[in-house]
Amino acid sequence: MQFSVYQESHIGGRKINQDRMGYSFTRDALLLVLADGMGGHVRGEVAAGIMLQSMSNLFQQHATPYVKKPERFLEDAFLAAHHEIHQYAKDNGLPETPRTTVVACLIQHNTAVWAHCGDSRLYWMRHGAILGRTRDHSHIEHMIDRGLATAAERTTHPDRNKLYNCVGAASLPRIEVSRQVSLLPGDVVLLCSDGLWGTLPDEEITHRLATQTIVRAIPELIDMAVTVAGPKGDNTTALAIMWQGSLADAGISDAGVVISTEMLPDNLVSTTIAASAELEGSDEIDAFNDDEIEKAIAEIRGAIERSNQVLK
Image (cartoon, rainbow, N blue to C red; front, side, top):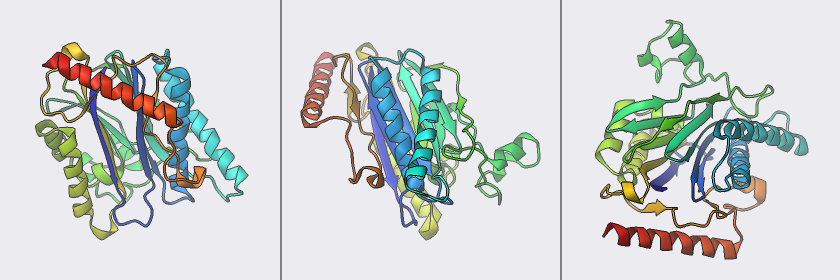
């Protein structure tokens, strides 16, 4: 399994960045997660942090080295995070539960499946065309479906920010899971918060990702969205991968740093997913202890070096 990956977040004009993002992988499976804490409720950033940490923990338990039932895993992980958020609110005596939107994608055996609640989005792109995109769980999307609004009103309609689905609400989340799709080398999968897609048109997003590597395109898209949104802009976050499949599929030039997992042991899990500082008392919590971190880094570097030698 080979892929290049890049992630970045900007606080925008807000006092707190309530977005969280991260990825975890084994030899045969890759999990991408992005959550956007809901600012209209208390401690949205905590809800987003619980969302990511819960999914990371379950991935480490079930990816051995791949997840046997990917759709069921995503549904169970979303529900587990929902219950953990409610427990957090109970333990801390909060007047209401923190809430978050979320989108997550599980990739294994050249196949991707994703799930979402709310308006955090996933785009699946090939050669500049959008092959798949999540449908926002919002009032404006409902109106568009019923012919009461047009697609052009998605970013301007006064009800565009009204959501009917999230993780952490009083009722259980309605988890929408995609069908499984086959990835080809060069495909791009983008997860982003509404701070990005709500500011930039899909055409701009796809153009940048089709004409540049993700390492260059994502920072440019983030900067552009922050500039357009101005001093009152939302948190803006994006996590993207370019899929390269296996060593036999390699050959995409200028893709940035490529992670190759094919030489990794089947019991190794690497993750960038971190808990919220308010949850764990620190800015970043890694899933490994120090020895495991050093071992993981050595394994990944060795795999990358071996893959580079094969390509030469």
